[in-house]
Length: 112
Length: 116
Image 1 (cartoon, each protein chain N blue to C red):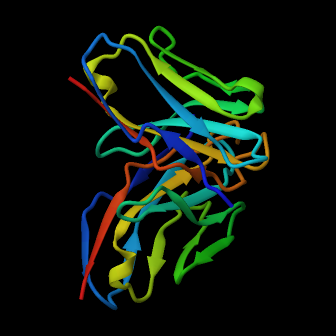
Image 2 (image 1 turned 90 degrees about the vertical axis):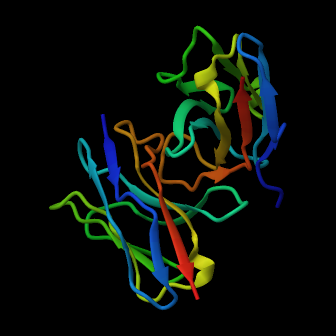
Protein backbone atom coordinates (compact mmCIF):
# COMPACT_ATOMS: atom_id res chain seq x y z
CA UNK A 1 0.00 0.00 0.00
CA UNK A 2 0.90 3.65 -0.08
CA UNK A 3 3.30 5.06 2.50
CA UNK A 4 4.91 8.37 3.49
CA UNK A 5 8.25 9.48 4.91
CA UNK A 6 8.45 12.86 6.51
CA UNK A 7 11.40 14.90 7.70
CA UNK A 8 12.02 14.41 11.39
CA UNK A 9 12.01 17.34 13.72
CA UNK A 10 12.06 19.36 15.67
CA UNK A 11 12.81 22.22 13.33
CA UNK A 12 13.81 25.40 15.11
CA UNK A 13 13.91 28.67 13.19
CA UNK A 14 14.07 32.37 13.81
CA UNK A 15 11.25 34.59 12.65
CA UNK A 16 11.43 35.45 8.92
CA UNK A 17 13.61 32.43 8.12
CA UNK A 18 12.88 30.16 5.14
CA UNK A 19 11.18 26.86 5.90
CA UNK A 20 11.31 23.53 4.11
CA UNK A 21 9.81 20.34 5.49
CA UNK A 22 10.54 17.35 3.27
CA UNK A 23 7.94 14.74 2.45
CA UNK A 24 8.27 11.78 0.09
CA UNK A 25 5.79 9.04 -0.59
CA UNK A 26 5.50 5.66 -2.25
CA UNK A 27 2.29 4.89 -4.05
CA UNK A 28 0.51 2.99 -6.73
CA UNK A 29 -0.64 5.61 -9.17
CA UNK A 30 -0.89 9.27 -8.34
CA UNK A 31 -2.67 9.86 -5.05
CA UNK A 32 -3.92 13.21 -3.82
CA UNK A 33 -1.47 14.80 -1.39
CA UNK A 34 -2.18 16.86 1.72
CA UNK A 35 -0.49 18.83 4.48
CA UNK A 36 -2.33 19.06 7.78
CA UNK A 37 -1.27 21.24 10.72
CA UNK A 38 -1.89 21.03 14.43
CA UNK A 39 -1.41 24.25 16.37
CA UNK A 40 -0.82 24.01 20.13
CA UNK A 41 -4.02 23.12 21.93
CA UNK A 42 -6.01 22.76 18.72
CA UNK A 43 -7.20 19.94 16.50
CA UNK A 44 -5.71 18.89 13.18
CA UNK A 45 -6.72 21.08 10.26
CA UNK A 46 -6.08 21.07 6.54
CA UNK A 47 -3.29 23.41 5.45
CA UNK A 48 -3.15 22.70 1.71
CA UNK A 49 -3.58 19.99 -0.87
CA UNK A 50 -2.76 18.99 -4.45
CA UNK A 51 -4.77 16.43 -6.36
CA UNK A 52 -2.66 15.86 -9.48
CA UNK A 53 0.92 16.01 -10.71
CA UNK A 54 2.51 19.48 -10.96
CA UNK A 55 -0.32 21.05 -8.96
CA UNK A 56 0.76 23.57 -6.35
CA UNK A 57 -1.21 23.84 -3.15
CA UNK A 58 -0.96 27.07 -1.18
CA UNK A 59 -2.42 28.62 1.95
CA UNK A 60 -1.29 31.13 4.60
CA UNK A 61 2.00 31.69 2.74
CA UNK A 62 2.81 27.97 2.66
CA UNK A 63 3.27 26.15 -0.63
CA UNK A 64 3.86 22.58 -1.78
CA UNK A 65 4.18 21.21 -5.32
CA UNK A 66 3.16 17.71 -6.37
CA UNK A 67 6.32 16.24 -7.92
CA UNK A 68 5.58 12.84 -9.44
CA UNK A 69 9.14 12.42 -10.78
CA UNK A 70 10.59 12.54 -7.28
CA UNK A 71 7.40 11.39 -5.47
CA UNK A 72 7.70 14.38 -3.19
CA UNK A 73 5.47 17.06 -1.72
CA UNK A 74 7.80 19.33 0.25
CA UNK A 75 6.27 22.11 2.32
CA UNK A 76 7.84 25.57 2.02
CA UNK A 77 7.33 29.05 3.38
CA UNK A 78 9.48 32.03 2.56
CA UNK A 79 9.25 33.82 5.90
CA UNK A 80 7.98 32.03 8.98
CA UNK A 81 6.29 33.72 11.91
CA UNK A 82 6.07 32.78 15.56
CA UNK A 83 2.43 31.90 14.96
CA UNK A 84 3.52 29.15 12.53
CA UNK A 85 4.85 27.11 15.45
CA UNK A 86 2.94 23.83 15.19
CA UNK A 87 3.18 20.19 14.15
CA UNK A 88 2.93 19.58 10.41
CA UNK A 89 1.76 16.28 8.90
CA UNK A 90 2.21 15.15 5.31
CA UNK A 91 -0.57 12.81 4.17
CA UNK A 92 -1.01 11.07 0.83
CA UNK A 93 -4.26 9.32 0.06
CA UNK A 94 -4.36 5.58 0.49
CA UNK A 95 -4.36 3.20 -2.45
CA UNK A 96 -8.15 3.08 -2.60
CA UNK A 97 -8.29 6.87 -2.55
CA UNK A 98 -10.76 6.84 0.33
CA UNK A 99 -8.63 7.87 3.29
CA UNK A 100 -5.28 9.41 4.25
CA UNK A 101 -1.99 7.99 5.46
CA UNK A 102 -0.33 10.41 7.86
CA UNK A 103 3.39 10.88 8.34
CA UNK A 104 4.90 11.04 11.82
CA UNK A 105 4.71 14.82 11.92
CA UNK A 106 7.36 17.53 12.08
CA UNK A 107 7.39 19.96 14.97
CA UNK A 108 8.25 23.52 13.98
CA UNK A 109 9.27 26.03 16.61
CA UNK A 110 9.75 29.66 15.55
CA UNK A 111 11.33 32.18 17.90
CA UNK A 112 11.27 35.97 17.68
CA UNK B 1 -20.99 25.92 12.18
CA UNK B 2 -20.30 23.53 15.03
CA UNK B 3 -17.20 21.39 14.67
CA UNK B 4 -16.65 17.72 15.38
CA UNK B 5 -17.43 16.99 19.02
CA UNK B 6 -15.78 14.26 21.05
CA UNK B 7 -16.13 13.07 24.60
CA UNK B 8 -14.64 12.49 27.00
CA UNK B 9 -11.53 14.59 26.47
CA UNK B 10 -9.44 12.52 28.87
CA UNK B 11 -9.77 9.03 30.27
CA UNK B 12 -7.57 6.99 32.58
CA UNK B 13 -8.31 3.29 33.01
CA UNK B 14 -6.53 0.18 34.18
CA UNK B 15 -5.56 -2.55 31.76
CA UNK B 16 -8.26 -5.10 31.07
CA UNK B 17 -10.98 -2.51 31.72
CA UNK B 18 -13.31 -1.32 28.99
CA UNK B 19 -13.79 2.21 27.66
CA UNK B 20 -15.98 3.95 25.11
CA UNK B 21 -15.51 7.15 23.15
CA UNK B 22 -18.22 9.21 21.50
CA UNK B 23 -18.10 11.35 18.39
CA UNK B 24 -20.64 13.72 16.86
CA UNK B 25 -19.56 14.77 13.35
CA UNK B 26 -20.40 17.97 11.56
CA UNK B 27 -24.03 17.96 10.51
CA UNK B 28 -24.53 16.54 7.03
CA UNK B 29 -21.11 14.93 6.76
CA UNK B 30 -21.40 11.50 5.17
CA UNK B 31 -18.01 10.11 6.09
CA UNK B 32 -16.71 9.56 9.61
CA UNK B 33 -13.22 8.39 10.58
CA UNK B 34 -11.66 7.14 13.80
CA UNK B 35 -7.89 7.49 14.11
CA UNK B 36 -5.43 6.39 16.77
CA UNK B 37 -2.49 8.72 17.39
CA UNK B 38 0.26 7.31 19.55
CA UNK B 39 2.66 9.84 21.05
CA UNK B 40 5.25 10.93 18.49
CA UNK B 41 3.44 9.38 15.54
CA UNK B 42 0.91 10.49 12.99
CA UNK B 43 -2.74 9.47 13.15
CA UNK B 44 -3.46 5.92 12.01
CA UNK B 45 -6.85 5.11 10.54
CA UNK B 46 -8.79 2.58 12.57
CA UNK B 47 -12.15 2.62 10.84
CA UNK B 48 -14.01 4.62 8.24
CA UNK B 49 -17.79 4.87 7.91
CA UNK B 50 -19.77 6.08 4.95
CA UNK B 51 -23.18 7.00 6.35
CA UNK B 52 -23.81 4.02 8.64
CA UNK B 53 -21.81 1.44 6.67
CA UNK B 54 -18.17 0.46 7.18
CA UNK B 55 -15.84 1.37 4.29
CA UNK B 56 -12.54 0.28 5.80
CA UNK B 57 -11.77 -1.41 9.10
CA UNK B 58 -8.66 -3.27 8.00
CA UNK B 59 -6.49 -1.74 10.75
CA UNK B 60 -9.00 -2.12 13.57
CA UNK B 61 -7.92 -4.74 16.13
CA UNK B 62 -11.24 -6.48 16.05
CA UNK B 63 -10.51 -8.78 18.97
CA UNK B 64 -10.73 -5.81 21.31
CA UNK B 65 -11.94 -2.76 19.37
CA UNK B 66 -15.43 -2.19 18.03
CA UNK B 67 -17.20 0.79 16.52
CA UNK B 68 -20.63 1.67 15.31
CA UNK B 69 -22.35 4.58 13.66
CA UNK B 70 -26.04 4.31 14.28
CA UNK B 71 -28.36 6.22 11.94
CA UNK B 72 -25.36 7.55 10.06
CA UNK B 73 -24.70 10.34 12.55
CA UNK B 74 -23.01 9.82 15.95
CA UNK B 75 -20.42 7.14 16.43
CA UNK B 76 -18.92 5.25 19.35
CA UNK B 77 -15.58 3.47 19.55
CA UNK B 78 -15.11 0.85 22.26
CA UNK B 79 -12.09 -0.96 23.60
CA UNK B 80 -12.60 -4.11 25.64
CA UNK B 81 -10.34 -5.17 27.26
CA UNK B 82 -7.78 -2.37 27.12
CA UNK B 83 -4.05 -2.99 26.93
CA UNK B 84 -1.17 -0.73 27.89
CA UNK B 85 -0.33 -0.18 24.21
CA UNK B 86 -3.77 1.34 23.64
CA UNK B 87 -2.62 4.52 25.39
CA UNK B 88 -3.03 7.16 22.70
CA UNK B 89 -5.17 10.02 21.49
CA UNK B 90 -8.27 8.85 19.65
CA UNK B 91 -9.33 11.27 16.96
CA UNK B 92 -12.63 11.47 15.19
CA UNK B 93 -12.92 13.24 11.83
CA UNK B 94 -15.66 13.78 9.30
CA UNK B 95 -15.90 14.89 5.71
CA UNK B 96 -18.75 16.11 3.59
CA UNK B 97 -18.64 13.69 0.73
CA UNK B 98 -18.27 9.95 0.67
CA UNK B 99 -15.92 7.73 -1.23
CA UNK B 100 -13.04 10.10 -1.84
CA UNK B 101 -10.08 11.35 0.12
CA UNK B 102 -10.08 14.61 -1.83
CA UNK B 103 -12.48 16.24 0.55
CA UNK B 104 -11.19 18.03 3.62
CA UNK B 105 -11.38 16.09 6.83
CA UNK B 106 -12.47 18.05 9.91
CA UNK B 107 -10.99 16.76 13.13
CA UNK B 108 -12.33 16.80 16.65
CA UNK B 109 -10.18 17.66 19.68
CA UNK B 110 -9.53 13.99 20.45
CA UNK B 111 -9.79 11.82 23.54
CA UNK B 112 -6.54 11.17 25.38
CA UNK B 113 -6.58 7.63 26.80
CA UNK B 114 -4.10 6.47 29.39
CA UNK B 115 -4.06 2.78 30.28
CA UNK B 116 -2.21 1.95 33.49
